[in-house]
Image (cartoon, rainbow, N blue to C red):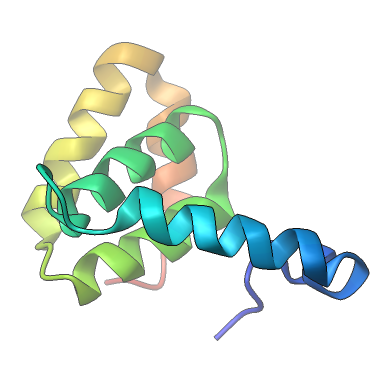
Amino acid sequence: MPDHPLSTLRRIDPEFMEELSKLEGFVYEDGALPRKVKLLIALAFDAAHGAEEGVRALSRSAMEQGATKQEIAEVLRVAYHLAGVGSLYTAASGMRDMG
C-alpha cells in the first residue's frame, strides 16, 4: 500500500499533523451523516480537484466503510456533472487497481 499522501508532512511537522489528524477524525466521524457518506463526498471533491491519490485513498476508505462500487460510480456522476470530464479521468486513474 502506498504511503499516505501527507506522510512527508508527517515527518516534517508531526505536531501539526497530529492536530490535523484530530480534526480529520472529528470531520469524518458518524453524525447526522454516516462516515461512509462523508468519505464519498470527499471522494467527489478530490475527483473534481484532480487529486488522484486522494481518490485512491478515499475510495478504499469508503469501501472499508461499506460503500459499493455502484455508490462510488454514482458519486463520480455528480462530480462529473458539477466539475467536468477531468474528474472522471482523475477518478479512473486513481482507482485503476480497484478492478
